[in-house]
Amino acid sequence: MKRLLHLAQFMVHGPTWHSLAMWRHPQTAERGFAWTEPAFWQHIARTCERGLFDMVFFADLNYISDTYTGSMDPALRHAAQAPEHDPIPLLSYMAAATKKIGVAATYSVSHQQPFHAARLWATLDHLTHGRAGWNVVTSLNHNQAANHGEAMRPTDERYDRADEFFEVCRKLWASWQPGAVRADRASGTFVDPAKVRRIEHEGRFFRSRGPLNVVPSPWGGPAILQAGTSPKGRAFAGRHADAIFAIQPNLAGARAYRDDIRKAAAEAGRAPDDCKVLFGLQPILGSSRAEAEERRDAHNALVPLEGGLAILSAHLDFDLSILPLDTVMAHRTEPQLQRMQTRYRTAEGRLLTLREVARNHGQSVGLPQFVGTAADIADQMEAYIDFVGGDGFMLSPTHVPGAIEEFVDHVVPELQRRGRLRTAYAGTTLRAHLSQAE
Ligand SMILES: Cc1cc2nc3c(=O)[nH]c(=O)nc-3n(C[C@H](O)[C@H](O)[C@H](O)COP(=O)(O)O)c2cc1C
Image (cartoon, rainbow, N blue to C red; front, side, top):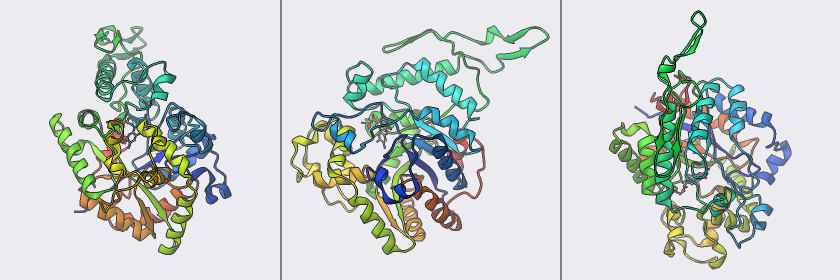
C-alpha cells in the first residue's frame, strides 16, 4: 500500500520567508502582499485546509542579524528574515478561520521561562481545540541571545537546558489531575483543591513552584515539533516530538536522517513512527515544464547574493564575509560551519562554493526546488518519499499570494488521484493528522 504524505505549509510572519525574492516577486506585487494583515494569514489557513494539509507552520527568529560584516545593513536592505513579527498571536486568528487544520509556530526555549511557555501553549491548546503545535527549538544566533540580555550558550548546554525546560512544562501540565474542575454549583466548589499540586521544581537551570493556572484540556496538550540536526537535537525529537522539520536535499542523506530519528524515538521507548519527518521542499509549478523552468529562473535571478550571504551567516552565526566567494564550503573545518554540511553539495554530490551555497540559501535556505507541471512535482515528491521511506514535506513557496493556491488547486488533486494524500481529515487535532496513516 502507498503511504500517505503529510503536508505542512512553511511560513514566516514577515515579508520574506525562505525566499529572499518573495517580497518583490512580480506575482506578489501584482496581487499585493499584505503580510501585516490578519486576513492575509486567514486566507492562507483556509487555502491549506482546502488542501487537507496537516498544518500551517511558522518559523520564528527574535533578532535582526548583524552576523554578516558586523552590520545590520545587509539583513535590513534585503529583508533577510527581518523584519519578523511574532507569529503566536496569528495562531488564534488562523484557527478561528478554519476547523480542522493544525496551526503551529516556533517558540524558542533558549531565553524564556517554562512557566510562561506551559501557560501559553496550554491556553492555545484550548483555544484551537487541540490544533496547536509548538516547535520547540533552542535557537542559534548571538543577536537573539543579546536581545534577551544573555550570552549564547554552547549547543550541548542549550539542549540540556531545553530538556529541563520541557520537563518543567510537562510537570506544570500535569499539576492538575483529571477531574480537578468540578464547577459544582450546589456545593459551591469550582476546583477540587486535592487535585491540584505544586510542582516545586528545582533544577540546574530552572526553579518553578507551580501549579499552572490553566485547566487541563480534553485534547492532551499541543503537538510537539522540533527542528534540529545535532545528535542532541535528534535525541530531543526522539523523546518528545510528534514531527521534525528537516532540510535534506540529498536522498541518501534524507534516508539516513529519517532512520536516525526513528531510532531515536525507539530508544526513547516510543514507536519509530511516532515522530514524523517533514522534509523541506520549494515547489515551482507551471502549466508546462518550460513555463515552470522560466518561473524558477526568474525567481532565482531576483535573489541578491548579498542577502543570501547575510541569511546564511545569520543561520550559521558565522561571518562569511571573511571567506572568498569561491571557497569550497565542504572543505572548511570551522565548527560553526559543520551543521549545514548537507547544504554544501548538490543532490548529486557535487561540492558547492560559498557563492553557490549563499545563492541557494537566499532562494530557499537550501531546500530542493521541485520544478515542473503538477504531475512532474507529484512524481518528484513520490520518488523522494519512496526512496526515503516516509513521511512528508514542509512546503516553502516562492511567492504569496499565488504559489500556495496553485499547489492546492493542481498538485493536491494529482496526489489524491495517486492515493498519496488524504481526501478527508480522519481526526480533528494536529496530533491526529500527523498520525493518520491512510
Ligand atoms: C530545518 C530547521 C529549522 C529551524 N527553524 C528555526 C526557527 O524557526 N527558529 C529558531 O530559532 N531556530 C530554528 N532552527 C535552529 C534550531 O533550533 C537549532 O538551534 C539549531 O539548528 C542548532 O541546533 P542543532 O545543532 O541541533 O541543529 C532551525 C533548524 C533547522 C534544522
